Image (cartoon, rainbow, N blue to C red; front, top):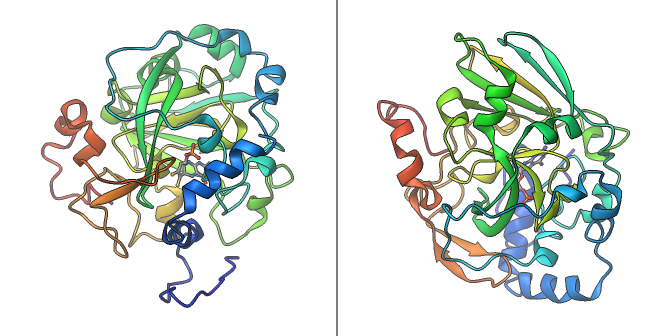
Length: 323
Ligand code: MTE
């Protein structure tokens, strides 16, 4: 159940509003928001920062060489700030969930490949990592809540995962699922949400060079609160497409209905491409707050990645491409 904490400035919202939206708005309105979090982060014990490298058997794979093709004009968001400002509803609807997310058990971890594939298979994360060539990419990360970061992800192209899975020609979409384990993730005891978290992309999106499977961050294995041991990042789309802690990858004919769409289809769609000119039904997407500096900067079409992805949407103009 959502817990509604009414403040004087809050406008009434429908029951299905993602709680992060109003929490985020509260934080942004607090203005001092990131300054305060930044200060606090500097002086507290940082869950996951020290522990991840010790506990993770893949630690020796990092850092990987940076791919210089993906240049960025913004400063990288400091790790200490990113590690304490996350969306991971399996653990909390609050951004400070790093401690809670340490309950995520990342070994053993398997990923099941199924649906329209030559042969179904289940692969352990460390075997998958051995089969992939890791690289680091600096990507802009833009949440639908109108905040953004710049993150040094490490991983491999989703196109390589697709090749590894060997889908059949009838596959039109890739669908991915997060783990389902309410004993490990207390948020999954909230029956209001349609667990497990599901997302999908068209095959053309999935094989676009930008679509990236993330297994590391800041030159180390991925932190639990960021979706260890493996997540997606699609930098031209709102962050909710970039799903975390993936256990299942399927190739399907029918368009997947994602987690947020299942909750509120009038506000969240399948495509979710970033567009400053298409407001969310309840707020503008024209600009975004840069987490770490609290600057407000203009949002860019496709989050600045139009040269890579605009062509994917030719002929699809009748679709709700920007929600
Ligand atoms: N994946 C899962 N499984 N659960 C979630 O709650 N939140 C999404 C996305 N992936 C989410 C998820 C949203 S709304 C955003 S903005 C990004 O993760 C946040 O990623 P970050 O915490 O690394 O910034």
